[in-house]
Length: 347
Image (cartoon, rainbow, N blue to C red; front, side, top):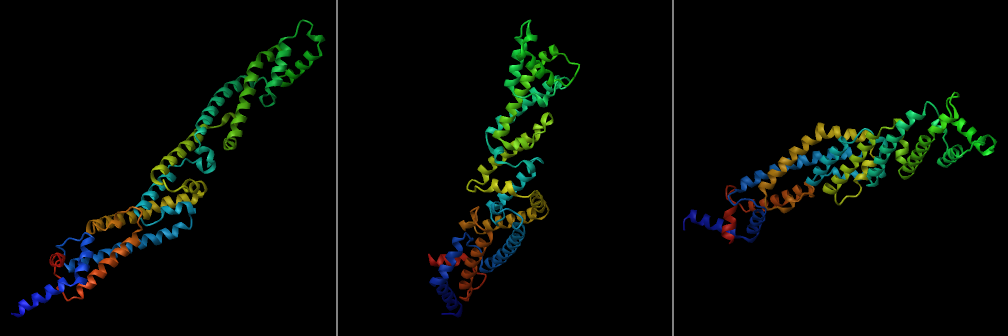
C-alpha cells in the first residue's frame, strides 16, 4: 500500500472517529454549510468576536444611562432585539410628549372618562365667556352666591305686588340684588333683567367645581375664563398614544407608564439626545452584525429569538464553534477540509 493510500486511510479513520463526527455535527446543526472549510469556519469566530465587542460596548453605554432612568424604564436598555424596539418606542413617546405633560402628568389623563370631562370643560367655558362679557360691566360675578339664593331673590322680586314697599321680604331681596351690582347707577329693574344670566353663570360654576372634584388635576390648570383647553387635550391624546404603544410593544410590562410618570424631564431629554447622537448608530451597527450572524448560523434558533440577550447568545454560540473546531483541529486534519467530509463519512 502506498504512503498516499495509507495517509488517506488514516484521514478517513480520523474523520470517522466519534468525537470528530460529533463536533462536525454540532457545527452542521448550527446551519453552517457543508462546503465551509475548517479554516473558513475559524474565520467566523473573528466575526463573533467583533459582534461581542460591539455588544459589550453597547451594554457599557446602557449601564451608564440606567442610573438616570426610573427602574421601570430600564428594560429598554438591554442588548436584545426586543429591547432595541422598545427603546425606539420609548424615545418616540418622549419626543411626542406635549410641553404641558411635564406639569400635568396624572393617572386621570389615562382614563376614558377624561375625554368627557374635557368636552364638558370646553362647553362650560363656551357658556361662561359670553355670560361674563354680558354680566361683568354690571354685576360682581365673583360674589353671586349660590344658585338657590339667586333664585330666591329673583322669585321675591318678580312676584312682588303693587304694595311691595310694605314687604320686609321684598326690601331685603332688593337690598341683596343691589349689593350684587358693580355699578351704583344701575337700577333695580335693570338688575332684575340680569338674573337669568346670573343664575346660569352660577350653575355653570357649580359644574366646574364638580369637574374639579372628579379630576383635581384640572383645577391646578384652571385659569378661569382664560383656561386653555388645548394643552389638556394634547396631554390626553399623548396618554392614548402611550396606551396603544404599551399594548403593542410592552404587553408583558406593566410599569412603563409609571416610569414615564416619574422620569425627570432633564433625564428624558438626555435619553432622547443620547439616542440620536450615539446609541442609534451603535444599535444599527449591531443589528447588521446580528443579521449577518443569523445568515451564517441559520439553525441556531436562540439567535432568532427577539428577547435573547446578544452578549449571552453570541458568547454561547462562540463557545460551541470554538470547542467543535478545537476537537477537529486537534485531529490533525487539514484545515482546508470541508465540513461535508466529516458528515459524509459519518453517515
